Amino acid sequence: MNPNKKRLRRSMMFLNCQKPGLIKDPYIYRPDSIMLDLEDAVAEGEKDAARYSLYHALQEIDYRGVERIVRINGLDTPHWREDVRVCVAGGADAIRIPKVESAEDVKRIEAAVEEDEKAFGKEPGSMLLMAALESAMGVMKALDICEASERLFGIALSGGDYTKDLQTVITGGGVELAGARQHMIIAARAAKVQCFDTVYTNLDDMEGFKKEVEMIKMMGFDGKSLVNPRQISIVHDVYTPTEKEIIFSEKVVKEIDEKKAQGIGVFTVDGKMIDIAFYDGAKRVLELAKASGVYKGDM
Amino acid sequence: MEILKPAAAGTLESSDAMVTVEPCEEGIDVELNSTVIHQYGNEIKKVVMETLARLSVQNAKITVVDKGALNCTLKARVECAVFRSNDQKENLPWGGVIE
Image (cartoon, rainbow over all chains, first blue to last red):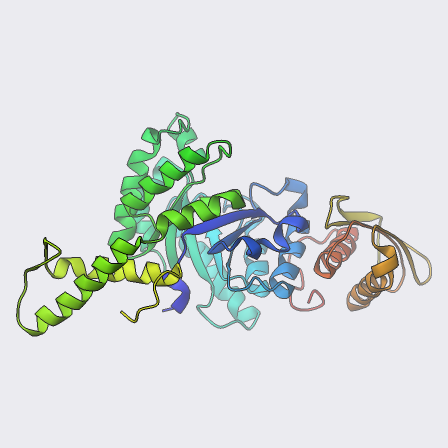
């Protein structure tokens, strides 16, 4: 398995490949991933120009460990094949496939990536994939899509197109997205891949944004697509475990390890009943704390 | 490559460059207008000439209006203008003459 498949992806910031000023130094904002966009943000007549900018940015700019994902154009356009070629040749870390509605869509991109990895002398399997679900059909096929390729690290909801397909609009409250969010996170967890929430476009309502991030974290999402650097620190703050959570998780891991050796299955930690079912959750909290730079322990 | 017809790429936004190529009977004629011409004029010309050499362009009139573009952006705009002058937008030689 590609070791980057499970990396931390709390924040995925969209950047327009048509704008050199945007893609030259986004690492200063320290998102976990950048989403270099060849699709909607790029005008139809500038698709070729965006690819040259992308290629040289990938080759020459040191993004300092920030993951470089490229959103290519959809399979219903004449652009996607050349997009895949430039992503592989340029050495992007992953491709975001838009408007995915079936496992077959993912497999078509996978076949193109395989062909291009051979053609450009890249390590087989080095390019990861993620799928954006933007329609009722895509959401209904979420589990098939999650299981379509060993390269696929996750799925993302694209709320704008999805609500259009549902014949409704984004309200800000989230009721119109509730079913898709719940369904997608369950499918992603069943397939053991990651799940990412849609963008929040009202930049004048940072309080509303924070509430939405808190909600999607509670639902189990791994992170969120972002449209502005101001949103990054809010996401990271919400996803950073508190000191209380870290101390409790350390105790849970330690006690479960010790009690298991003694043949004890159920016990209490700080007055709470604990058994083996808490182990993975506590480990995840510590991993997130480490990745967020607030835990230096060795558990 | 030959410059078959006039073509342009880029914008006049900050950190970008507008590059125009036109057919020319003999040699390379570079016209540069830059906000940082005194500090980086020679470097910009060098990047433009190296990019044209990589693409084997021997005859061209090229106009660059630079707005503080990085070298990678200058290369991207020159390459785009040259390939547009040949109407080639697919099966591009990534990792070949585009390096």
